Amino acid sequence: MRLRQLQALFSDVLFNQSLSYELESAFQHYDRDELDARLKIYRNNVFASLRDCLKEIYPCIYKALGDDKFLSLAHNYIHEHPPKTAVMVAFGSGFADFLNKKLNSSSAAQLPVYLIDLARLEWLQHQAYYAADSASLTAAELSSIAPSKLADSHFSLQPSCALLESEFSVFNIWQDLTGGHSLTDGTAVISNGSFSKSNERDTRQSILVVRPQLEVHTYLLEPGMHAALSALQQQASLGEALTAASETPTFNPASAVAFLVQSGALTKVTPTP
Picture (tube, rainbow, N blue to C red):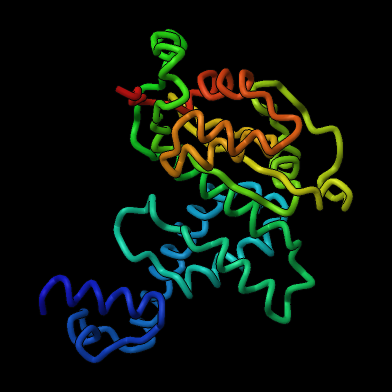
């Protein structure tokens, strides 16, 4: 039996408890009860490791649900979505969709609906941590562009840069669960309420996740800032991005440009000829 075939059969018995004749023949000649017992030990160790992996990626989901409920959901997720590659960085990518599916099932009342977007936020943070490194554009580099060419210039964003729009106050919920101190458009803010309050939970929020250097930063965005970043993601020029954002009454173009530089979200610039 080739190694790849052996690995596929062994994976099947771990995650589906389907012991084929070929695999059973490849093992030492244990009696069936002893073989099942040995495989159960191995299976339990694999599932425990994968549950710990999900717990590290989704610490806020874990904290919101508690140990028993999270580990039960994690076990079901692992069973339905076992790792497809040995690169564990990719494991857990479908957890938000899995939670969405659970919310649409008979157990929906037992899960807060905001968990889906909270899981999406934590996955974006996980991806940002492992994204490629790229030097951020400095204020000096930006100021070197002639004012007459700035509006038509195109900017590249950090590979880690990601946006999330949520119908819920996911930023506040994430902040309360982490007990952290985070940033909103370059200004320090601390949430002062409990994430369990419905009037805070049901406010629409836009979020930026980016890792300009070693640490992942999470920002609460004003609608105009979200519109500008979204336009830049679609290769719009700076002028086009600011125009798209200007539909928001409180949007300040100068503050927006300053935030783009201060957050480290910009990397390369292509000035107009």
